[in-house]
Image (tube, rainbow, N blue to C red; front, side, top):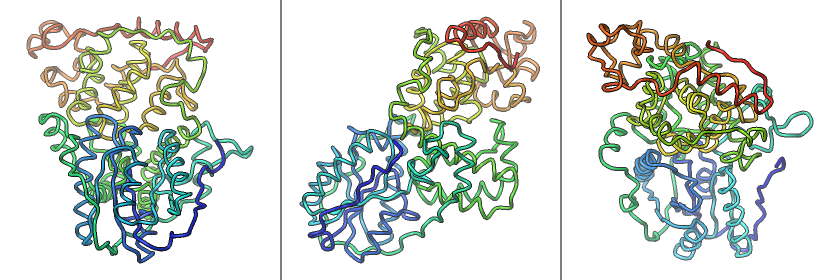
Length: 493
C-alpha cells in the first residue's frame, strides 16, 4: 500500500454543532496531541473518551503492557482533571461504544489520532464509513509517527525495505515541530456514564504488579522527566554506553513512547537542541528504527506472522517445548541469556543488546521459530509494540526485509565478556553466580570444581548446565541456513 488510506470527507450537515468526542487510544498525553488540539480549538465542548477494544487489541497486548495501560489511564485522568475536565471509559467494540456515546452526549464529531497496524486501520475505516452517512464528522490525525507511512518512498515510488536509505530519506524530508500542550477545554453540561478503570481487571497478580511498580512510573509527566534526565546525563555518550547492559546508558523511554505518553516529534525536537554529536545522532536513529518498523508493518500487514523472506517458510524449526520453557525462565545455562530473560520477568523490560542476544539464542542455538519468541515478548514487555516486536524478531532471525544474515550467530559467551566484562549485569540478575570470579562468570561450566565450590555453585543444581553446546548449535544453524540456499559464515567464533 503506497497511497493514503485516509478519507476525511464527511456529511457536514450537523458537524459544526454539538460536542466533540476525542477518542484516546495510544496517545495518552495532552501535549502534541493533534486530535485534542483540534477539538479544543473549535471552542465546542470536548468529551475525552477511552475505549478498551479487546477485539482489535490496539491498546495493550500482554500482562505487563495491560498493567502499564491501567496506570497510564489513571495518569491521563489526573491530567484532564487538572483542566477541569473528565474522561469517559468504556469497554467493548469501538464502533458500538462510540455510537452509544454519540447518542448519550449529542456529539456531532469524533476525532482521534491514527494507528497503523492492519487490524486497527481496518476497524477505523469501517467506523468512518459508519459515521459518514449519519452526519457525524470523523477526523483523524497523525500523532504516533514522524511521517505517514505512505509518504516515505524510494525514487521509484515504492516503500523502503532497507533501513539506512529509509532513514536518510526521513532526515532529508525533515520533521514537523510538535504541538503545545492543551491548556483549556470546554466541557459539556452533562457527561455520559463511565466505567471504572479498576473494574477492567487490567492488573496482573499482585507480586508482578509490585515488581513493575518498583521499576516504572507511567504517565506523560514521567515520560518528560525521563527524557529530560536522559538528555542531561546520558545522551552525549549514548553511542557507546547503550551497548553495555550493566550501565545506565539508555533512555528507557520505549513504553512511554508506545503508549503515546510522549510522541516521536517531541523526542526529535528535544534532540535537535542538544549539542550535536554521535550520541544524539545514534539516539535519533533508534527513533528512526521504530519509525521504519511501523512503516514496514503498514506495507506488510502480515508481518507479525509471516516471514518477509519467503525462503524462511522452509526453515526446519524445532518444537522442543522443554528448551522453550528453559529460555522463558532464564535457565539456559548461558548467563547473559538468562540474565536478560530474568530482567524481563522482573521488570517487563530488557536491554536492547541483550534482547538481540536472547532472540538469536532462541532462533539460532535452539533453532526455534521466531514467532514463539515474539509471542513471549508481547506478553512480557511493558513496551510490547507489534511493529517493533515483529520487525526486531525477523531482523534477528534473518527472515525480515532488512535482516541480519541468518548465518550471523551471536556467541553469548563472547558477547557477555565484551559488553559486561566485570559481570555487573550478570551478578544483578543471576545472583547464584555472583561469587564467581570475572574469569568464569560468563561460562561457569569452564570453571574448576574448586572455584565452583568456593563460589557456592553446583552446576545442574543451583545453576543449570548449558542446554546446548555453542559450537554444535552453531553448526546445526548453519546447516539449516544452507538448506535455504543461503551462504555459510558466522561471527564471534
